[in-house]
Length: 243
Image (cartoon, rainbow, N blue to C red; front, side, top):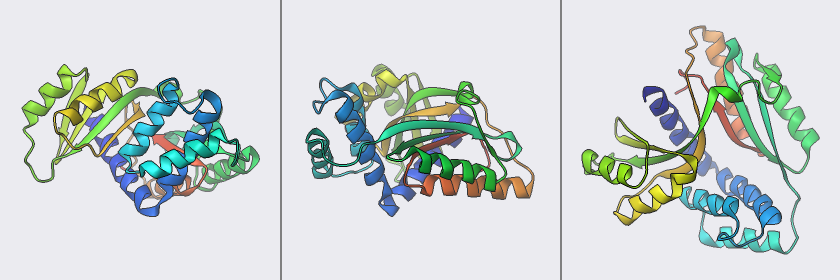
């Protein structure tokens, strides 16, 4: 699970950075708007909305913000968004998947294409790198204080339906099938564990190391600019040396 652990730690850092910038509220709000307009505002009858509400809560989005976004979408007000996924290659062939939510596909496509081109990558066709990733549920628990019993946590997680468990420094990482994520989350929370995050994500099957300094520099810039774009929801890649 070493590759998975590297990915989860990188993702954990990204989430904290996004939260500091305040962008995570806006980005999840866009996704919730789409989910409500597609499937209604009742999370009991809209699995996608239910997942996004859990995602929002995992990222400390206030309940008031969530409810306000749902009501606004139900009222037919606000922007009309669509979800578009881009796939391509960073420097030295690093696989990159970019998930976007946009009200202007020309703007978003132009921006994403520009980032890839400027930082020594190239945009490819949908499907060109997707097969290199596996969809998983990922739960992160912080053990910085060292007061969590690893064996007990692992037992609780596995009994709840988790499929894998890893300890990486002071972080515990729990992996599930995507559809089992929130059942495991609820079981862990019921057992008294505080979760840093619980999200459905894409895990690279293998990681690639970059040795060339220019490749490392431009790959870092590509990720940075993609993540800073307001239309970009998630960036997945298989670069190992990006922390």
